[in-house]
Every structure is written in structure tokens, then in C-alpha cells.
Length: 464
Image (tube, rainbow, N blue to C red; front, side):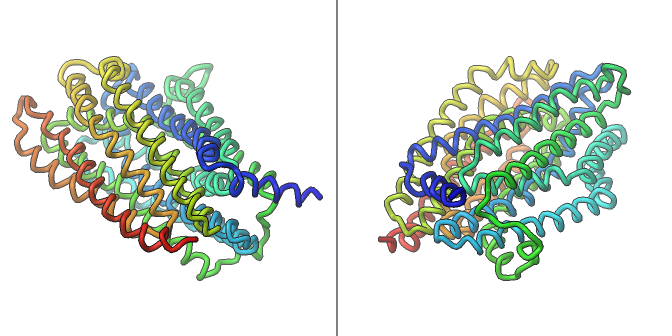
């Protein structure tokens, strides 16, 4: 009787609930979770930048380490996206056995991913950091921070997988609780470990790293516990963990484009660090701070995308054209609303946001101008992010990848490099570099619309 009730409850959420209500019910917790993650990234930077000694240097170090952290998140999240979409579709088709094998193979892949991050920590961190700076103090700080994040990354990897398993079954509230618990842990530990409060040693940048990984471990542990408690329809055991080439291939058919899409953020930031660093370290610091502030808005769009994907994918597995179309309509509408709010928020609060980090003079002015100009791209960025989630749900991994390549590579680095050549030594024309982002998002959104027409013809129109 209990198992039957669980099945009915799950069916009610993913099959019977109106799509608009389901989108809000699943989306709001995920959005809150993602925004909390962005918030504690900002808090990390705020605490580090206000260190009594070498605060701005430490901030620069975190900026250089950030692309590699993003790459780690990309691999974990991309794999989770593949597991999410395949599991959701299997559940929509009523294939519980395949859903269980998908979750088990996801765990196998998570173990492999952690092993790779562990190796990266020991052999890859130092050369990566040194490729971006000649400043030995900055390089040492960044290397120490990133090394700790790599070798203790098992919490991050676990959360990236089990968060998606919870979201795929409509339990996004629990994934949010896990995310928030880790974020609060991180925020509490930041000043304690960075500044040496309550008798702890003053560890500076290393303290920020330890606070981060402890928070990730808390989130990962809770997400595992929640999965085992509520996802009763997904079987666990060695049989399901045993790697299946077929299942892994299906996971990465969707997940690999998502990994590349997320990794492009890392490549973009790494490339911009080098381009901007050739002009001025102040540009690197200003962009690094802006990037973390804008994540507060963009992560909200990513959160809604993570609700769009399982809803549309499940509906596609049901072969329900009506629910697929409603998922797309409400997903896109809510995303645009979020980005309009974000645009207004950044424009109004650009100055106080910049001053949180103790900036002054030219660096402060550069950060404010970045907020004023780059935030213009938010609405188009939101459209692109929503399209990526839709494409992933409708077997359009390649289309999702094309949009990502356009908005984070093709129309970013060459254009930014060209504009950087026009910036003089006094940085009077630095605003030109920030124009790169609105240009990239607008052009990419036009391309996404054209790709959606093709996906609509191939995957939606054929449904009953």
C-alpha cells in the first residue's frame, strides 16, 4: 500500500499537476537554492577582500582560481543534467528499471569524476594558475585555495548528482534544503577560518577554501540522505551501479553538451582574465567581482532551467504535446520576468554592490561601469538559458551546445580582444569591453530561435 501511494504521489506531481503550478512548485525552490549558492560565492569574496592584509591581492587570487572551480562544477552538473533528463524520461515512460540503472550509473560516474579532480589537485593546479599571472604572491594564494577545493571535492560531486536525482522526481524542495544547509555552513565558517575567530588559527585564503569544501560536504551528505529517504521508486544496489555502456552513452548524449556548455563559462572567464590582464589588473578584479554579483541573477535563470528540463522531458516521454508546449511557454515567460527584475536590481544597486568589497578609485569605477553595461544583456541571456534547458529536454543536446558556444565563446573572446585593443592606458575606454556581453547575448538569442524552429518540427509537432 505504501509503495502504491508513493507512485500515485509521484504521478500527481509530474503527470497530473497543471504545468504552470508544477513549474512554480519545482522552480521556486531550485531558484532559491541557486541564488543562495551565488550569494555565498559573493560572501566568500567579500570576506576575503576585507582581510586586513593583502585583501585585494587575495581577491585577485580567487578570481584566477574561479575558472577552474567553474570547470569542476561544469563536469558535475553536466553529468547530473544527463542523469536528470534520462531518469525523468524513463519515469515518464513508466520504465522504473531503467530509471534505477540511470541513478546507479550516475553514482559510478561521480566516483570517476572525483578521482579525476583529485589528480588535478596534485598535478594541474600550479601550472594552471601560473599561466594567468607572474605575481608570485597571487599565484601562491590561488594555488593554495584551488588545491584544497580539488582534493576535497567529493562533497561537490555528490551534491551535483543527488540534487539532480531529487529534482528529476519532483523533490526540488529537498535539494534546496541541502543546498541552503551547505551555504549557511560556508557563510558561518568563512569569518571564523579566514580571520581566526573563536580561537581558530587565522588561515586567510586557505580558510575560505576549507569553509567552501565543508559546506559542500554538508550539502552532499544531506542530498544523499534525502534521496535514499524519498526516492523509493529508484532502486539502489551494486547491480544498478555496475557500469552500462548503453546507459552511460545515453547520459552523456544529453550531459556532454551540457558539460561543454558549462565548461565554456570556465573557458570564457579564463580567456577574459588573460585578455583583461594584458590591459590592467584592475580590469581583472572589476570583472571578477561583477561576475560573482551577476551570478546572483543568472543562477536564478539556471535554477528555473533545471525545472524546465525535467518537466518538458517527462512530458515528452509521456508524448503529451500540450504539456510540452506549456512547459516551454511558462518556462520562457518566468525566465524573462526574473531577468527583468535582475536588470532593474543591478542598475539601481550598482554602487552599493561595488562598495561591499572595499573597492575604491579606478577599480570601483570599473566595477560600476561593468554592472551598468553588462546587465543590459540579462533578458537575452535568460532567453538563451531557457532555450538550453528546453533543447536538453527534447533530445537537442547539439542545439543547446551551439547556443552555449555562440554566447560564451564565438561572440565573446574575439570581440573582447578587439575592444581591449581600443582601451588606452588610462582606462577611459574600458566601457567598450563591457559591450561584448550584450552583443553576444543578442546575436545568440536570434540563433536560438532559429534552432528552436528545427527542434519544434522534429520533436514536438510529431506528438499527439
